[in-house]
Every structure is written in C-alpha cells, then in structure tokens.
Length: 501
Image (cartoon, rainbow, N blue to C red; front, side, top):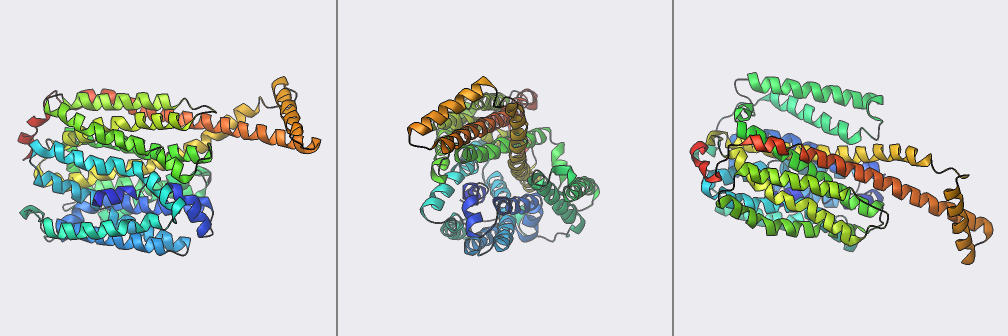
C-alpha cells in the first residue's frame, strides 16, 4: 500500500496539469513544476534512504515516511497557489522517496530466497500497476470532482497503512537504529547533482537547452557534483551509500535493467494519455481509461511468470523475452495514423505493458540473488533510485524529444504545403465548396477550409513525432536483449539462496 501510493503520485498528476494551471492562475509550463519538484526530491531521497533507515531504524523511518507523505498529500490538496503546491510537492517527494527502498529491504529480510518470487510478484502489482492506473484515477477524479482529490485520495490509505505497519512490522536486529555519522559532503553532493540534472532535463526544452545560461549552469553543477559524489562515496570511510554493491555482477546488471524498465514504463505512461488528449481530443477520464487494460494484463501475467520461474526457466531467458516483446510492442505502437480509434490505442497499451510482467520480478530476483544481506538496505535504495530516476528523466526527455521532433517534421512537411501545389489547391477548393454548401459566406468558407487543413497538418506532424519517440524507446528496450543473455548463468532462481547470506 505504501509503495502503491508513492508510485501512483508520480503519474496521477499528469492528466490534471491543465486543470491545476487554470485553477491556480499559471501557465501549463509553470504547472509542470508540480511534477518536477516531486521527482527531484524523490530521486534525491531514494539515494540516501538506506542511510536514513540505519540512522532512525527501518520501522521508525518507514512510519515517518508514511505519515509525512500522507500529511503532505493533504496539504497539496489545500494549496491555493502554485508556489504553495510546489513546496508541498517537494516535501511529499522527500517523504515518499523512502517508501519503496524500505518496502524492498523488508521483503528481502523477511522472506527466504525461495519465497521472494511470490513476494516480489505482489510488489510488482503495486510498482508496475500504480503508474498505469495513475492517469486513469487522476482523470476520473479531476473530471468528476476536482484536481485536489488526486492528493486527498492518499489520506485514508496513508492512515490505514500507518496503523498496519505500526502493529505488524518489527525490525530484525541488524536493522535497528544505531549511531551513524552524518555524511554531510555525500548528502550535499548527491542532492545538488541529481537535483540539477533533473531540472536541466525538465526545463531544457522550454529554455532552448544550452543556449540558456541557467541550463548550462544546471548541467555543470549536475555533472560536476554527481561525479564528485561518486568519488567521495568510493573513498569516504563512512559513506551514506555503499557503492560497492555495484561490484556484485548480478546486482549491477539488474540495476541497469530496472532503470531501462523505469524509462519505458514512466515515459509511455505519460506520452500515451498526452497523445490521446492533445491530438485525439480525449477527456482526461477517457485518456486514463486507455491505460487500465494494460494494468489488468500485468496482473494476469505475473502468476504465469511465477510458474515459469518455479519450473526452472532461467531468469536471463525470461528477462530477454520480456525486453524483446517490449521492443516489438513499441515498434508496433509507432504506427499511429489519423483515424486511429480507441480500440487501437488500448491494444497498443496492452502490448506495451504486458512484457513488464516478464521483467519486474525476474530482474528483482536476479539483482538480489547474490547480494549479501548486510547490503540489502543500500542495494534497495540504489535499485529503487535508478528505476525512479531513470523514469523521471525519461518523462522529461520524451517530452523534449516530442517538441524537437514536431519542429523538425513541421519544417519538413510544410515544404509540401505551398498553395500552387495541385493537391493543396484542390483540397482547399473542395473544403471551401463544402463549407459554402453548409451556408458559409465565400470568405468565411475559404478561412474555414484553410483552418481545417492547418489542423490536419498539425495532427500529421504530431503523429510523426509520437511515432519517432516510440521507435526510440523500442530501440532502447531492444538494446537490453544481448545484455540479458550474458547477465546471469543459466541456473534456476532457487539456486540463489546460497549467495544471499
């Protein structure tokens, strides 16, 4: 429940941004800070959550995060201005960042390796289905009630989760609070580095990328502080995050794989409803409904994947199959056309999300199969951070790529739109006659014909841009297939217990 709330809030805001902008008297671009601020804070805290868990004790830190996340959700709903909403979204992301790593390290400690597949399957329902259902729930609440309810909906679930965790959860001896040195340098470098990189990618397109002094400053600070943070964490005596977890081959490869899964999952969960709303003219609710069947497909397929692992199918074969089918589905989705209907978009979304069932649980099993128990907290923090941070970067970069691609295709297609061209001339004449037949005056009919042609032109350019983004995401997924085949030895996942301790 905790992870579901946190992941849900990474996408539930997407379809409500136009309503938030209108209600708070801001532009759409400014309203996107409500999304960016959450992702920035979330990415930073994910990295240091292992250290915070050791500092406070895992149960206590988990409860702090749940209570803080719930309270900040309520305050977001009460916001009366955009700056107020951004501040509370920052705080919400700060508390939310600790929920997923805590949940994952709890599962790793409580369940023996032979039962982790079943446990991670339940986790997958929360982590994969939440971003899929986010736009659906957000659209329905926004259209039928108010955008404020996309935040209020967290409150009852947060209260229930707090009570259940307080009653049922106990820390193992090695996860109770203990004296931890505060790594001020590490925290500062990670916070500045990841935060600046997220701001750079999110605002780069709006500010013309490196033509902007602000974006250049963010790039220099982001890259410089991130590199410095890596060097510091490798050399510090008491780092807040043990990067030596990446020396474990399976964990390093699994972390990279889950990062790519996050990229495709979050980017597609944003651009599909965006296409439906901005190009096809769907309502927020209808755009969200496109994603719901994909969530159902994942829930139905996860038990099938569990059976495959029980029957001894090698993990790296399952993961390779998942990435290959994901790439194929994205290439098929890059076939958008002018008269695309709701059914086509739903089928595209089902094909995109179904392969996630073959990825999430097997990748988790692979990554933690040989990681020592003492590194579970650091591994969970880094694993969750990479998935969410890659996902947030993919959201920003896919939006920027859509804008850039539209501009390129607009220039290309407009070269064929000159009036003396027979196809253009005949279309305008036909449109004008059609308008006049419906009672338009000649001048108004001519203007209507030009306007109609312009709308079709914009729709065609947009479809070319969306198709290009799907092709790029498909290539990224396809590039993981060879890596999967060399990632793990062909052994049953039950062989993992020996290395877990």
